[in-house]
Length: 144
Image (tube, rainbow, N blue to C red):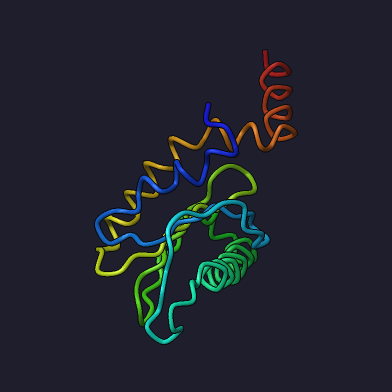
């Protein structure tokens, strides 16, 4: 299992091939860890990690509510084309969202990179959410 303090170094592994930034956040938008930087020519060198995380958090929250309202199922991933790149996000565990920002990268490749990271992060996310792990363990023991 990956230690929580090593998550930024772990996330940095997908910052290749056009991926400039990725981050792990709570569904409510709280940024937990990030790796890489997104620097806009318009921002004069200021990193935009928090801005990109805020945008994705708002979009994720809105789509999650929309899906529940219309019973369209659970939201698993979102991909947004922006003026300066592409943002993709994917649900990880019960409360976390893993997202990446890339420039010049195909949507499918960005999503594939997130899927690989999600698989690798599953155990760590379970450890960050002990109550959800306890609930699933209790449910399994009740079924037996």
